[in-house]
Image 1 (spheres, rainbow, N blue to C red):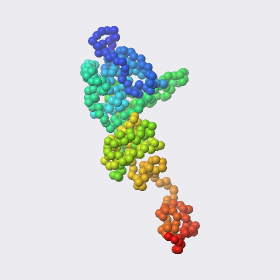
Image 2 (cartoon, one colour):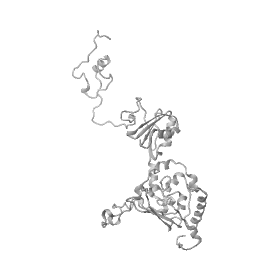
Image 3 (cartoon, rainbow, N blue to C red):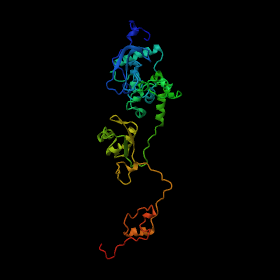
Image 4 (spheres, rainbow, N blue to C red):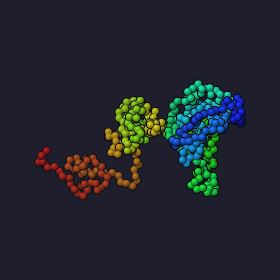
Length: 383
């Protein structure tokens, strides 16, 4: 194990791990497609099981710090996490958030003897599997979850690969200027819980400040209530990029919930409106899609539409008028002026141009205010 020489031929060395490529998430791998890695067999001991393993070191991209693997692949496969950041490979979340959402209570041993026995059992299970998914209780519990779907990271977060802060710049002594490979920024508040992160807490899933922050965010998420008007069967889908998502993609997802009446895409507003035939179909689609709809790698926002009183669903701008928020009246502006009796009588006679029931907002809008009389039809005029 750790402390055993590389040249010694002992039983413990048979348990050392050798690998050809690391298990990494897209964020840690970086955005550089021509990445170059260095490999050192049995270079360090695993931070979890303390067994020597093959380490890999690489630079994810420009202005990024060099990254290395810190746990062995066996420990990574048991928890289905990245060997570097220890985040889940499927959802990109800490193990504490994933396990609490899936209802897992698997207790991993933390003593040396029990860890070695547990690791050997996991290696036997991994040897029997195809190696593409987790094993044990996690492998049996990998299923969909509303919380995981809402909190899951669908795109890489390359900001996590930034270089460390230059301590000399913080003290005002850095003389390298723009050539300094470290960031010239002030550090975060030492009292911030995110400044105190531990590798073992992240792996075992307890007392993780990042997980606590995400759990609080999940609790604060608003819940969408169905509208009281049962005639509303339209769903608003936001974030529809016309270059990546077409009407067929939306139809392929929403058709499973019921019969679709129309799908109207508004490319200029990057949104779409899906109208179902029945209210039950719309409710099923909302329950299954709100906060967790991902199509072609894009996370979309699904909300309820609003009823249309005029029957015209979209205005000239391409957006449903009823979806616009109702604004409170501005104080100080004049209200609607009541229609004068003479105006109403003339409008009823059909001699006044304009809509008979049009509201008069200002005195200047009254055509008979200055004594004008509406032309009346002649009795002898042909009908």
